[in-house]
Amino acid sequence: KDFFVDHMMVQELGLLPTDMEENPAKQGLVMFTAFVMFGSVPLLGFMILMAVWGKADAAEFKNFAFGISCALTAMTLLSLGGVKAVYTKQSKVKSSLLMLANGTIAGSAAFFIGEGLHYVFN
Image (tube, rainbow, N blue to C red; front, side, top):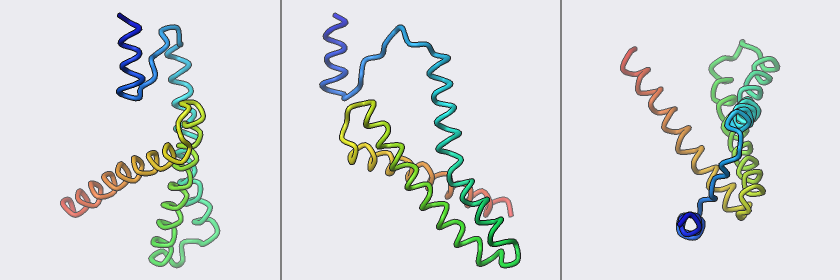
């Protein structure tokens, strides 16, 4: 029975079967490390730009820094998708583009919710 369930997961859903012997603490540490490493790229880019540009031209800086942060985020998501493809044995291009699409949708939702809340409360 387990064989057929695993076979259906792989063939029909494209999911890899879980290994019951894997350590959840190790998986959590790997997720946390990846989150910190990949999540800090746009923030570090913003902080470096702020240090170089300075606070004098804040209005002009805001749009430029947002664009750079978005570009860094896109490059980070594409590379994360490529790394994921190595471990899941999927196409690197497809995995990278799916990761970029997922991140774009999630980031856009967070941005517009934040803008909406800013509009409501100000």
